[in-house]
Length: 267
Image (cartoon, rainbow, N blue to C red; front, side, top):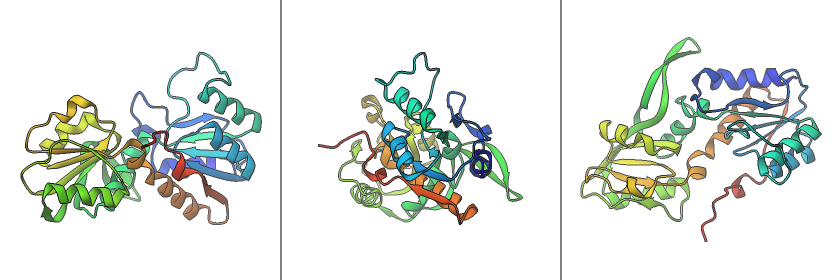
């Protein structure tokens, strides 16, 4: 098995053509012709994840977030990105990321959030086009919007989201004085889609990395910042299932430290 065989499956699910212009999805370290004996999956490619790959004999790391976002002017062990690159090259490990590519497909990040909340009538929040998947045309783009079968008071809606995502806390705007039935979401940093959520008729919008000033909202929508990691981590399981389905006898594993790999600590 070679790297290109694995990435072909990943890109049939989340094509590189979908990525944002600023993104760096795809293969960032290694060659498509490298032989692969094992795959390790995580959300972020850290030096610790590379060490884990070495320990378990994996020579391909697949993550959601790219290791390298912009041009590296220096690769030094004092920098976490530089150290991960150095460790990977020394060990002959290739590194691949499915980032905004996996954000934009209905079965990806935001779709997983919607399914976790039990929403119905799902559609892409910010559609940008269509693609063919198994002979069927599907809409692609960022975010998702859908409906609960019955409306909930705002406080109960917040409680349902917290339970669904296993949250102890969430950053919220003021509770709105109206029932919530339509919910929009975007995994990761999604504040740019707040207005799209309002236009889609959502009374609740959840994502990560909402800044202070965005919480001054009109009284027709409630914002919830559920955390960047918390909103996206399920994509690791999705990619794992995809690879296991296509390579059932191959060594594919999820990082043992995935649940503890959130760089943000709530103390």
